[in-house]
Image 1: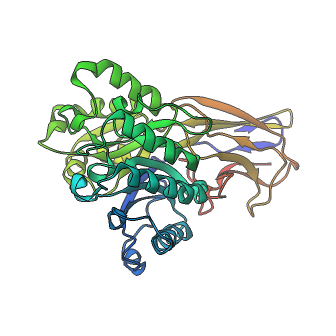
Image 2: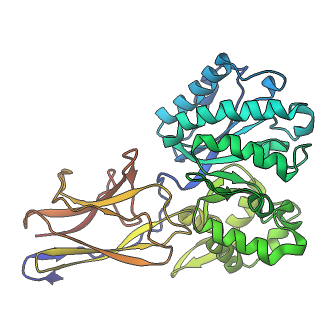
Length: 394
């Protein structure tokens, strides 16, 4: 079809393919121990199909002492390794990674606060690469339960110390989040390592405050990354229809999930058929495609020397990395000065952006990248290895 006199637009289609885009999707989990400096062990794990890694740094070796320079050097080496692989970090410091938090955390709360203050400086050092920071050090797996420091007064003091890092801090439950005040550049947000497990989601939601806690999750997840682990448990998921699972993921704006846990959950979801916008798939594939943001070019129109690009966010959440869209030629040269941030497109919404190409000749492509780290962002449309979507030609 020809618009105006000179531009022939490409018909836009949605591939429903999985894209490895920054700040969304499945993550791989790694445990970092400061008393084990061997970085080589990470090289055996394939992380090519994820943009995120969860690094749980077990600091139990320092439970009765300060976190020293040698500890910091090992932690930095691990961070640097994954950053060089092009991964953004989900980060958690904890005294435990096997369900023995009470035994492994410091006997003195003053020691916990000293650790939090020291680690805040390290977190700030890497804040540009941290996608989400999780937890307040204490409890089993750093999830603030099964700890002698579960009282809100303890948690708020740890939160205050960690807040010096200048990154949002995700806690496990709405009840915990509600105890913590927002600071100038830090918000208490949420993560969930018990998704769809029940009783009620492994304690995430209070039985006497179900409606309030659910609403808090909906509200907070609509403004910050939310995700964690899905847990099969006793098979509670079997009571859900496919549409129910999809609706929960949408309402909670699920952004990221553990790739390897829970395999029983994922095997079940692979066995359940689902139809998304007429596209037949299974529930697991549907989740894989739609975690976080999923930008698709809906159409382009050329009128009065302006090329208008319509972009829809088909994912579960907004983009929590800064994504910029521009026009380029086939060889990647910019076709004008226009740049548009598309990160804030609400799930299910379409926005339009007008470009004035510098030339009216040749092929026109649409591309996107993050403005902070310069990563490629792939649209859901057919595209090449650079993420270029063919819009049409003059």
